[in-house]
Length: 324
Image (tube, rainbow, N blue to C red; front, side, top):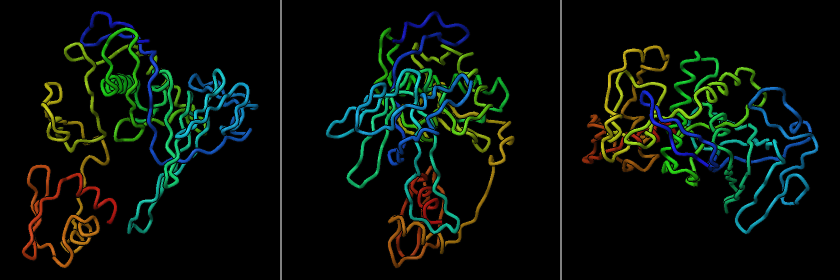
């Protein structure tokens, strides 16, 4: 249940965020059944909600304390009170010409009910439903070793973003039924760290210290987009995502952006390589060589061999990331 917000104070709205919400995890991670060792108690960290060693493996067989419910399209797994599931997975393979390509892994404990779905191609998707505050405690967007003020600001931004993107109406008793993804496309959710990270407690304390603090605009949670770097200048929301310009997401100059080691970088891509990357991504015709490229707003205009194409910045990024 989410209570009505109190009167805003200094731009913040105070709410109780104890509603259930859905977190759609990456739709290609693979769940494995925890063994007794991985299901043991993991220490006194306030974020840890590990099940006892006797917790059954998450499979289709129902067991007292952790019932499993099967349906035609998914498997529902419910941990015992105060328990969590250990989930291990590997991100899907993406064809690439990188010499040292990596496939990141996912390992974490997820408190809450898991919905496991298997696609026709064998990929497994997981959705976890859990109390809203527990979701926030599992956010992994910044290192928990950062200064306290930075953690507090991130906790408020993460809370506001989640409420805005899940469609919270602000009404008491409203349930957050709209899923939110667990990747950088939304907010990175990793659950309880495995192995346990003592510094994670600092993030949990930030979430609890800022309990109920939400950025609001016209009485509703603001969509608080954030990123690690901006190259010294942010963009308006309509420049990146389209839609109506929002008054609180106007471009600003960021003078402290240089604190990030990746705030500024440059790479030169020869036309020969650019041609190959775009052809591999079906963005440029075969048998034509690119001889000219110019940026136009958020797109790249390329010409060559009598052809001319406009490539969206997002498509260009994906092509280079995949085929470079």
